[in-house]
Length: 254
Image (cartoon, rainbow, N blue to C red; front, top):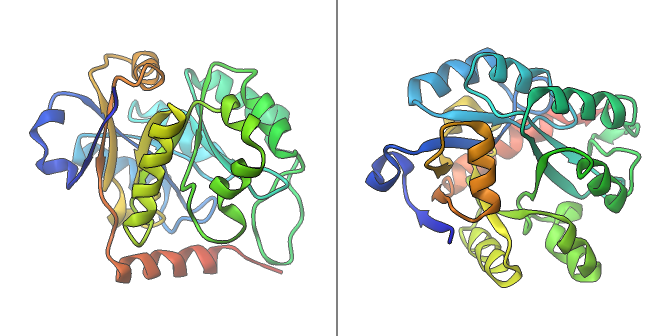
């Protein structure tokens, strides 16, 4: 049974000896502000692992894996603007997935870059399922075209094709948005993860997914088995808008 705790993860004694991973963060090769090297240094300082889930890019994630602080991951977006976090059991699968299905399939944008791929939502899920991977729906109650909850209400069979739901995302505000994600995960009997969704270094590690594990494989298996903790909380409204501004400016496309 997943245990979800709304609190500062560095104050929660229960997770002290667990593997702790921020499963959602970004670098400057997509719409984050800071470099992979900066995120890696901070992760080591915090004593955590990270999955750098840049939009349709894996270079930073691979750097973290090679430094032994990363889990191979990527955030991909379908033609319908539906986001997925895909986590891999080994970096070779991460690289193969990227080369076969992501690298050359970007849609062109003008004005604002929604970072969409040419694949329809179901196609993208199926291609992710070809690998030993964990497929998670991030920030399901976000505003605008990326509100996956509304999309899946209209296409309920697709819920069966994903592994879990991101139940705490640190830049979701107000807090009720994470509460709704928690409720949906329980109702749909899905696995649960959490991450900071940091686009700036100072937010890295604000939300962690944790379990007793000695390897990436065991850690991801524990999530599928719902034998994990998710610990974290939302940032303040001021910090939310600061993060939004970074994302907006990084996604301007002409």
